[in-house]
Image 1 (cartoon, one colour):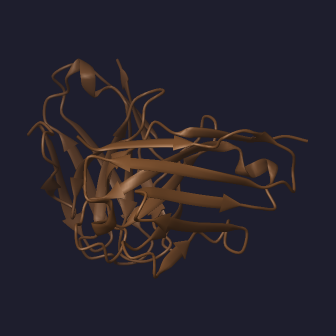
Image 2 (cartoon, helix red, strand yellow; image 1 turned 120 degrees about the vertical axis):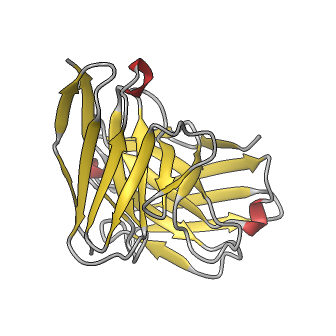
Length: 107
Length: 123
């Protein structure tokens, strides 16, 4: 199985900050990567797919980059509604696997 | 508007069985691959199983292979997860998730999710 490792596990940031979350795959997955946002008590929400394609309706302050084994989710200017947990997920092979999550907290 | 409504979650003893359902509406269900994703209390997301749009091919996480069976009824727009030999570690919220790709070939990325149904396995 492909292991997905996110860093950091948590980050404290202020409104307006630029936040970067990294996801590393245990083997190459080309661009078969998605990012999700999850708020407490809610279902996850798809933000980015194909490593860099923005899902419809997602604000442009979210962006994704990377290919192969190393990927990044960037929030260019953190907004109050962005405080949540973020997960990466590989779609290169079965079983699909998620990273362990990165919690973005208020500083 | 896409809607996914899970049901069937319950309290069950280890070794027991349970069948989850997910009623879909707002899209052409028969065109999309579907998946089940679970989340143990306070933990991260775990993909459990996926199925092609036709129902002809199914995929499973190692942790549930041989115990869980995914299926679908395209005439009733419903996804199922039959769970047997349940373990304490299967305790989780189970989400039904629709794939983003209308080819229906593989489950890739999950663009719509239900609200989840809670399965609790207790001894």
